[in-house]
Length: 618
Image (cartoon, rainbow, N blue to C red; front, side, top):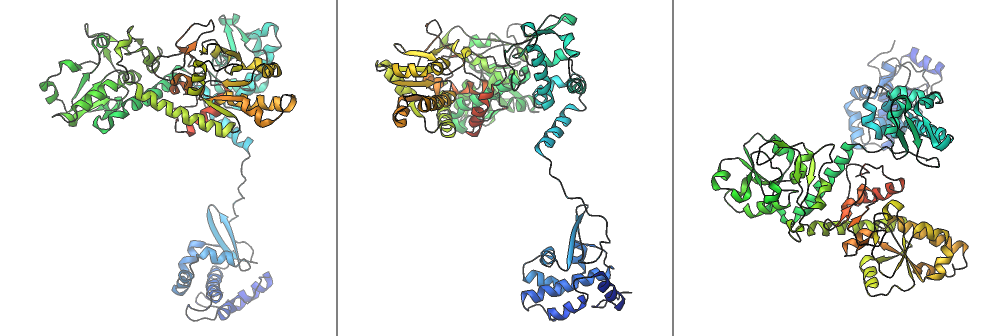
């Protein structure tokens, strides 16, 4: 038996240690090697005395492994003083002496045993194996598809589209349709041709084929109903990836985010004199609230917040009784100006303006009534036409009416927000250039505009690098200039470069056209005799920094495909709608269209520049 008070092992244990082949059978001599006495010898001597105490504790436990914490509790005060003096932990001492100790993880706890002694404790944990990327994707996919209730998959189609099995199923359907006449088949005939994996996916997510394909209207068109429903594949080639159509809730979420950004920009100039309150706070506030309508008579004739008082009819008695006074208008601009005027008054401490105005109120399903009849309505006047895009769409809000007269928006009231948009656009344009095409030469929109107005565009070619859908809405108004689509120049690059001295590319914000410019340069420099001096070729190829958005900010005009002046422009994707001037434009875009693949990286740059929205499609 072992004497628990003895510093040396008993003869029996000393003999057993010798038979087990411990590195040092006479472990009890460590105390002599350490020199004994108080702490204060050499570092090695001091630590060896701690090692001796640890081994003594293990011997006391009959060499059963001990938790590190238990070992620390049985160490002497002298040992603790040594650890403190040399600034080292107990585990550090054990790790420094692997010839004496073995440490293993068991159930998240570190156990220490003497080296050379059979492991007498519980089996150690198996080493953690890091999952491969494919295993992580499979685990994430399983967490999405398993346990879905019937119909819930339609509400999380974005997440479902990220599952590889979903993309595989859609590609399988596309392959079947490409092989069919006119790329069309009956829905009922598709099911029998599916692989087991596709059938299993549909079973897991509890969707019918028609329900799945309706979520991808830009790729699959369904005609008819019931058993006679036919599906047609829109494209002539197989796509690498399919993107679902955003739901109405996602579209409205994007509109709400842009609204709050616009409201913050437009009211920034009022500083701390006008304090805001959110719709949620105003609706859930337990104190008495008085709503003040700061809009025009024309706007108020359409609808008002129940119980609100027009600002023009407000009296001192109205202001005295409520604990909180909330002013509102269309997006918060007029009401913020009213709050600023009241800031130094008697009741300024309780005056707030509604952030986002009535547009935000409708996004939160706030109640509106007709002033004349007091009946509930879902209709609102949006002050000016350009602000209609910030109200919820028909699926979530109500009808939006705007004035036929431009005089309802005082000149310059939205200019501050437009200036902030231009600053963000300039920052984005510079960041895109640095990231994607730093070698491309740029021309600023004001310089291009002045050249066109001065008639100094002789032998200059303008290349519109946008999609056919965007060009079908409008392009820049450049009298006397030749404007051609990017795909035409690609096919006849050498011919165009012989006929023009300068080639200027442009798109929505300058990202795609810069990439196109760089690719065209490589094509000419690498295969054409026109390549010559690369530096000279570079100077012949310019890209418009900020694209059409910058062009419009600096007063450039637009023309439709027939050459007629227009105020309509296609912003390409929802994410770039808040980079255009607010007034004087009509943005033409299907907000429910999926985000194009080539836009994702540019949207990510916009987010990195501090322009983060609710999602990549916003």
